[in-house]
Length: 137
View 1 (cartoon, helix red, strand yellow):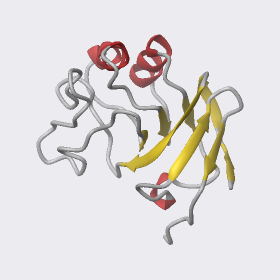
View 2 (view 1 turned 120 degrees about the vertical axis):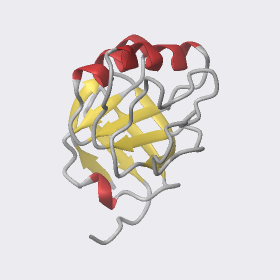
View 3 (view 1 turned 45 degrees about the vertical axis):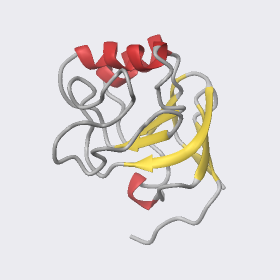
């Protein structure tokens, strides 16, 4: 199924979905050396984002989070792509400099996307190719 959205950062990335119901802070929330979410109490604490299509509402925290996204990319631990409800400047800047495809404003709420579904984000076209069933609301 193709889900339309808005193109934010160009490129194409494919991987298994990793969905967070809450925002992610890349500064002190994600280890740039391993790609593991380390924020205490976060629903994805302990999960690795390397090579995943990471879906979350929006970013939070310091502008240094942009650099952490870039460092993840340089270290080979970046997500394959990012899906946001609303991409904000911290995520956008980090994704662009880290060459991570990003889309937002999907026609389907992120809460309907399921973990583990193989997904392709086309940041050039602003589309998501979702190869699974949507969750019920």
